[in-house]
Every structure is written in C-alpha cells, then in structure tokens.
Length: 135
Image (cartoon, rainbow, N blue to C red; front, side):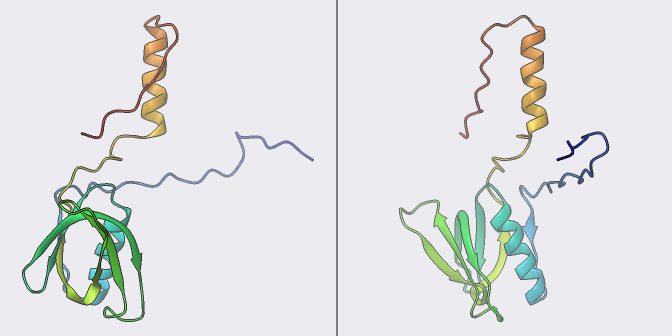
C-alpha cells in the first residue's frame, strides 16, 4: 500500500459558518421556510419560533422531519422554559429568530491549537486546555 502524501492529497475547503446570531428569518415561500429551518437545526443556540397564531416559543431545535408538504414536516425542540420536548408543524410557523448565543461560534480546531501553542511558548508546563463555559 502506497503511503499518502498530505502535501499532494486532495484537500477539501472547510465549511464557512454563517453568523446567524440575532438574525430574523423572513420566509416568503415554503422553500425559504424549509431553508431557514435547516439553518436553525444546524444552529447551536436557541431559536425563537413565531407561530401563525402569534405565539412565540424559544428553545433548542434538536430534530426535524421533512415531508413532501409543510403540513407533514415537523421540527422538534426543547423549549427554554419547559422540561419537555415539543413538536411543531412547519405549516404552523410564521417566522424564526436566531435568538440565543451560538455556542459553536469561534470554537474551531485552529483556535484551540493556537491557544495551546501560545501557552506552550509562554513556558507553561502541564498545559491543559479547558473548554469555555456555555453560560
């Protein structure tokens, strides 16, 4: 087996993370709503869902089930102020706000390695990098 030379191996570009924190997602079409909910699913913070009846639910989206129509598609979340999971039909959603802090923002591997080497260069021994608190 030939060893892989990392200098000539195909390297995929990294994903660019969108800064969605604070964004109010307006959806004029079913497809725009689906796109917004996909972004909300990938978001690592709370999202506020505004329902068509005006109610607002803030929580962490942990699952979605996409069907062929909005009526047979659902998003599941942990509401911020409740101790249970809920499910909401896409057809009942009027809008989204990325209201919580994105806990994954700035937490790249490169940032972690940079901090490690800064600590090592400063002469620290037994370097132990700990994750930031999530508040």
